[in-house]
Length: 265
Image (cartoon, rainbow, N blue to C red; front, top):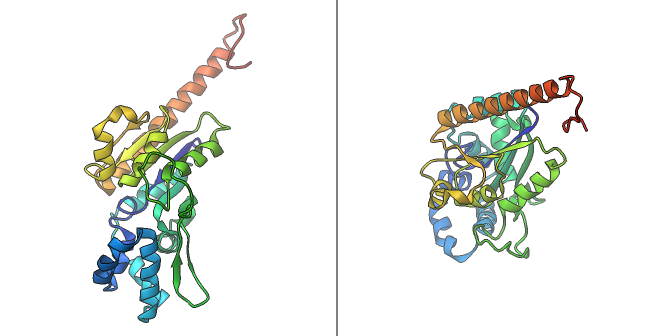
């Protein structure tokens, strides 16, 4: 089962809302956020908002408490734990930040289920305020598709993950996401892979415009219960296919025929 790599988006996929908006709204800074939104990239704006929160006396502990009560469907945590227990390699690719994601995952007691979290750096500086920086850096040239924000191309991250596992051609990748930024990595998946877009969300709409552009098999989902059902079914299906392929190879190599077995050579 270790041949399965499951990549999750975070906002509106693992949790039921956007974690950036959740923190800003819950702490009462929505008006200022909306006022500044047209003036800078989202990632830069979140860093600016963390400065504003700090200047108004909002503590790191208060931010953590807000994150701990973020809404999440009750079947998402069991789905993640089940996939991990089945031996899948779970990873996150998100345009949120490390501080938000790790705080939430630790609170939910599932942080150890993930081997890798790819997201914007978020850390507490010497002044005691949260800094949020871009994943790529704004000086990185665009990759040409025009599908991603300036601070992060999820497609490039997926390519790096693919390169890291390409030594084992049997590995299969499942990508679970909802947003427009999840479309670029979906285009990088292979025919043996699977994409799980959240139905009636931006990535679903983009895929529906021309499904043939996505090589991977498409399996949509609607909520946490649906996510759990589709994901576990896919994992079991892949496991069965691998088992049948292994049995076929074993039988073919031990058939006693006087022939060259390509599987053994």
